[in-house]
Image 1 (cartoon, rainbow, N blue to C red):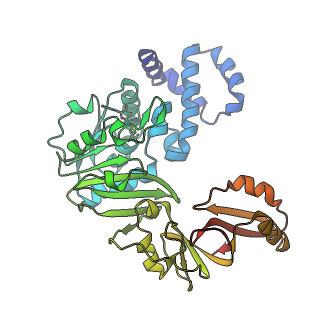
Image 2: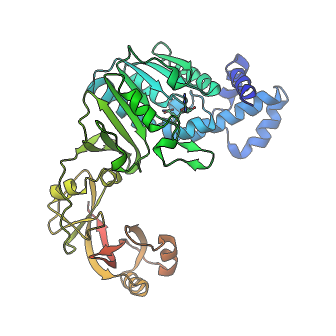
Image 3: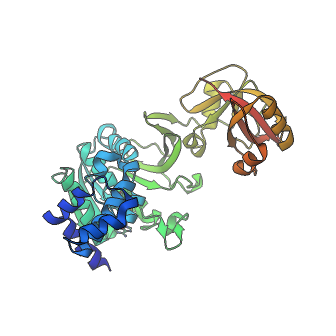
Length: 395
Ligand SMILES: C[S@@+](CC[C@H](N)C(=O)[O-])C[C@H]1O[C@@H](n2cnc3c(N)ncnc32)[C@H](O)[C@@H]1O
């Protein structure tokens, strides 16, 4: 199977394959059958199948790589799924190149090259290693297609067999998918986290990408942990080692920006009554356990000791939280909510929830909304009690 895939991919790089791919630049997947039938009249069926599959993957990759790069790059289904999105890879590459002065780096688990490409664009010479032959062929084709092949050397190898001495830095982005989907235990990553930590200690500095759900207790000694979100969605956690990384430090970084919030080890803020304003910290802030830092910035308190909503009496602003003005604080009650929204002619509701088991879609059906007004409804707990808070985003 691997050999067949590799042969099919190599044929895409021939003149005939390239012409076919170019002709599929903005094809409509809804027309795939008709397109395939037409192309098979003048091309080999295997090549047509490979080109159509690649065209589909390119369309899927636009969200991560942008239209311009995605149209020039190559992918495998796993490769596009597992690749670091360009914005996040570029931020990390900048931290390596500009922040840490890294000029050469071993990317141990390069996949189709999401990180290697960003690093090369930041001027770093990259040894890109992967054990899968097709993935390596795709990474190599990507380096060439983007004019970065003078900076990226792709090597097919087991990461454990690679000598990283002579490189300024190591980066490891282990595979986190097993046969049964996502892998949560860092020791079940490929390679396991403990191996990656050993590799990270071999160069002047290093970064390991891990799942954002990694428990803080699992962050290894000597590492700094950074949680990264993009457009409000938490994308990853990164463990930094060596120069520039402070043992035990935590940080939340929000993209675009970047805007970074460093932990100061503040104790959890005291809970208190819901004030006129409510702030929802970014997911990276919550994962990094930095809600106290944001609460301090806003002069706020928690609405409940276990819930990451900050409340304040005066308006404030923080790049690390979204603010709302609260108009009502009530015990959770569907009929009461329906009556209130009807009375206020609310037809559009944004449901936010934290610490509530209510399904927003189920609730929405029961509300039977109609009217020209909009409202944000928070389903949460206030001082332990299931509650609903109504309000509007602050401008
Ligand atoms: C999460 S992906 C890397 C994605 C990459 N950072 C990107 O942005 O495109 C992990 C890769 O590690 C490779 N891999 C897993 N275990 C490996 C090992 N022991 N040696 C070499 N490569 C390995 C897999 O083949 C897979 O392509």
